[in-house]
Length: 430
Image: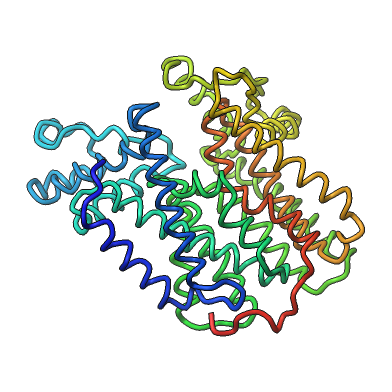
């Protein structure tokens, strides 16, 4: 991991992007602050890459980077085999002979195209990065910053909150700073989802320029390619919020019940009409696949959790859902001195959980004023936490996946305790 002269050049270029792009304009957030956050994210991403190299031989982030470099070489020297590989012909012995194997590229899970997307992005960046890992980290940090800016815009518009509590919550919490700065899936997931949320909020507020519309569609497609389940669970919460904007408490509650109830009925019908798309079976198979990997390669899953097993039917799945959400919320839960990194992460997580529960208990009188925004955050985070708990019996993986939810979860106390701004405070030029 050699830091080349290209790194400061790319940082300077990306800082110019931050300074010039209207996406980063906000009356309560200066460009200098955003640039400092960006540089801090690069440092966090580099540290994460170094930590993965020392602890896990590189982990996903290094595997994607190396595969991207390998794929670039294949594109330059064996174009026909590169096309064959993109088509999915994994049996091409010629390709393996000439271009090597790409361990991070192969993903047999029909729901996920994330490995391919991340690897291809690393391949494209390799043409301008001099194949330097730190430069790739800088670009992924920029993407994640743009995504977090979208979530910031979403909450500025839907909850009308502003000020340093919002900025610190979305950009500076340790887990967000660390996990969503790595040159890996999480940074791209927050990029696609965040830009989609931000542009959707802008469109809903009346800023219907063709650029906002295009960015909304493209970011939605990006989010689908990285974390399809993340977007699918976001859509009902976002739709329920939009149709409940400005409505009474009773109408708001009724809308959320109808949207989520209707969504569940659609899932049941989908499993009957298209059996391969049965969500219950997909969740069950994903969990079993994770269990097989964890037991087959125990050295790579040192934080394996013995979680209760559920059966492949909707009743069993629903009965296990609350416990699964609880497991995700409370993980990691390790306070042994032999596991210092996990111990620090456990303390941090308990702090977040305590803040959320204290905010709900002490701020319950304020909930009616922000009922729509609170329901949006609570239901989205609950369903995603439940899905993670149902499919992921490894604490280390739960930590990474949960980092994408953290901005939405920690906005609950911010919404309850930060005085709402006025709609006129929203930057109309964004």
